[in-house]
Figure (cartoon, rainbow, N blue to C red):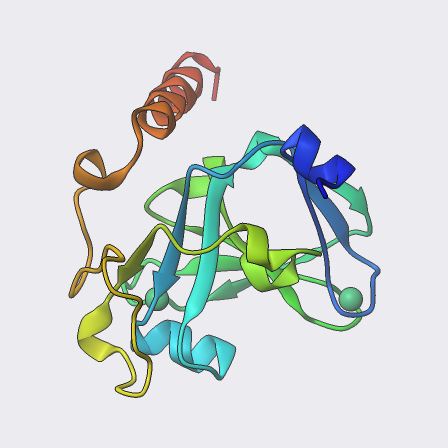
Length: 169
Ligand SMILES: [Zn+2]
Ligand SMILES: [Zn+2]
């Protein structure tokens, strides 16, 4: 059975206490399963599952999130957006893509099963018990997006960059 959410191709998410609620207004650009040590430490788990999406496609439905500057592997830092009450992280912004792209934590979606990873990255530090499904795209570190992203996502990214250039600072 198709839910309303599935029919509309939107995705709702929330923190654990429910103070922060949000909705992705479309499918994301691409979903990373990151096996780097930084993600392992931040999640306390074996990997992080991040759905990349244009920031203006993330609608805040409830709450006032708190932005926590956090060190990142690049040395440029990232901003992790957390619930001010339960402190669960709902998304982050990295220096590379800036504020235009959010890395939404798939585990905070109401139905995370709808967004399996499009690629596994930094598998060089993957915990050995994690066995990837055969045929799933995987790279030792990072990758060239032109090689892996669907044409539609590349076009969306171009549109986003064009908007960023024309918008007055
Ligand atoms: Zn909360
Ligand atoms: Zn990572």
